Image: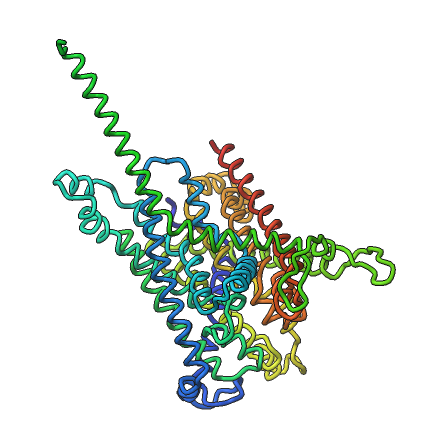
Length: 267
Length: 318
C-alpha cells in the first residue's frame, strides 16, 4: 500500500473526533473538579478541599440512600446474573430448538421497550398487586431491577459461552464425569470471566437507574440517583457534586473491571 | 422360535432410537428448567405490566390516581381532541399532538446531529492502528456506562446562565448578558446528542472497521477527489452502520425523560415527561397509559422499518 498518500485520511475528521471526546468528558471533569472546590457558589474556584465530601457523608439522607442503592443493586445483580447464566446455558451451543427464538426475544424484552413505558407499566401492575394483597415494601423495586438486569448480564455471558467449544466438556464426559461434575469443574470455571462481566454490568445498570426506580419506589425507598434528582430540583448545591462524583467513580470502577474481563475473554 | 441376527440388530437399533429419544426429552426438560426463572420473571414483571397498561388505557381515571373500572375511550380521544364542557362537541386538541411532534422533531434533530459528529469520530477510530482502536472505543463507551442523570446534571452546570460557557463569554467581553441556553429546545437538543452519541459511534465503527481499503484505492486511481471518495464509496458502504446508529439514537431520544426534565426545565415537555406527569401530579393513569402505548407503537414502527431495511440489504448483497 502506498505510504505517501494516506488513503484513509479525510479532512477535518480527526478534529471532529477530538471535539466529541472533549464534549463527552469536559462536563464530567468539571463536575468532579468543582466537587473539590471549597466554595458554595459552584462557579468560581477558590481552594481545594474535601469539605463537600465530609458534609455529604454526614448527611443522614444521603447515607440512607446509599445503603438502599447498594442493597438493591446487590440483590438485583446477584439474582439477575444467576438467572441470566442459566438462560445463557440453555440458549447457546445447541441446535436450534422450538421456542428458542421466542425465549431469546423474551429475555431481551426489557431492552426493547422505552424505559418510561416499562416504568409506568410496572407501577400500574405493582399498584394493582398492592391493592389486592396489601403487601408493600422494597421487594417490588428488587423485582423490577432484577428484570432489567437479566438482559444486561445475559449478553456477556452468552458471548463467552459461544466462544467456548464443547470439546472439554465432551472429554470430561468421556472420562465418566457426571453432568454435575462436568458443569462445576469444567464449564463453570471457564465461564467465570463472562459471569463477572455480566454481574458488573448488571450492578452498574441497577445502581444508575432513575426512571423505573422513580416510578416504582414507595415512600422512604430513596436511592442515590433519586436523591440526587430531588436535590437538583430543589437547587444546586456543591454536595450534589460530591455525591455525583462518588457514584461516577463507582460506575467507572465497575465498568473498567468489566472491560478487563472482556479483554481476557478474547484471549 | 429362532432368533435371527436380523431381529437382534433391529431391536438393538430400536433401543438406540428409544435411548436417543429419552435423552432428547431429558435435554429439553433441562433446557426449559434452566430458562424458566428468567422467562417467568420477565413474563410476570416485564410483559404482564404492559398488558395492564393496555387495559388501563381503556378505563376511566380514578379521582386520586389509579383507575375506575369503567370502559372508556376517553384516553385516546383526549390525545387528539378536546370535548367542550358545555355542548359536548369535539375539536382538535393541539397541545398533546404538538408535544408528540416536538418529541419526534427533537429526537430526529439529535439523531442527525449525532450522525454528523459520530461519523467522523467512528471513521477516525477505524483508521487508527488496530492496537489503539480498543482504547478509543473504551473512551467513547465509558460515558455511556456512567449515570445519565449525573451526566445531564454536569451538562446543566455548563450551559446555565452562571455556567462555564456564559461566564467565559462574558469575561472575554464577547457577550454582555448570558446567552439563554438552559430551559430551551437547544438545551434539550444538545443534551440528547450528548447522552446518546456513543450509540451512534459504535455501530458506525463496526461497519467502518470492515471497510475494504482496495475500493478506496481504486476510486483514487480513477481520479476521485477525497470528497467524492467519501460520498460515493465510504458512505454507501457504511450505510448499514448509519441506519443502525440512527435507530439506536432516535428510539431512546424519543422516550427521553431525564434530559427534557433537567435541561428543558419541565416546561419544554417531551412524551416521556407527559407520560410521567399523568402518573404523578395529573393523576390520569389511563391517559398516561394510552400515551405510553402510542410511544411504543412509534418505536415499533421504527424498529420494523429497520428490520425490513436490513433484511432487504442483506438479500441484495447476497
